[in-house]
Image 1 (cartoon, helix red, strand yellow):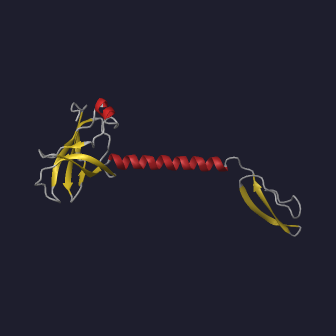
Image 2 (spheres, one colour):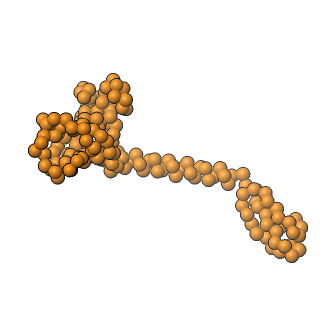
Image 3 (spheres, one colour):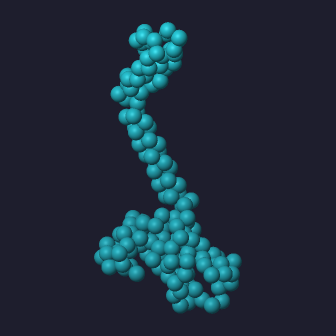
Length: 164
């Protein structure tokens, strides 16, 4: 930092401000040269974004993130509000996923809970939306007044043979 440029002078060079002593009755301010100020901020933002993504995918893979979808679920008329049933879904194979404009392994398109008719309703899912490694996925589902909540508890490894 050089404060000897003369009285009544402000020197601005690059990234860091520094106040200097009085020189000729006027405080001189300099800015030290640093090419890495802006770059280091971008690098830190990139690192923070990467950490946030890593945390999100970890939480999502553990089933802690809610995914709200309009999906089909089989439900008999005698399924009471607040009652839970063990349900199952079959992740979409590549061909079916393409026809439905969904990603391969999408596991939320249809949930089978009993032999009742299919209903298209809002469902809050806790579990990953895409599960191509499973042949089927298990979900205990709870009925609410006009929706359902399903939480993934397991699945069977292997390619799905059921195309939904």
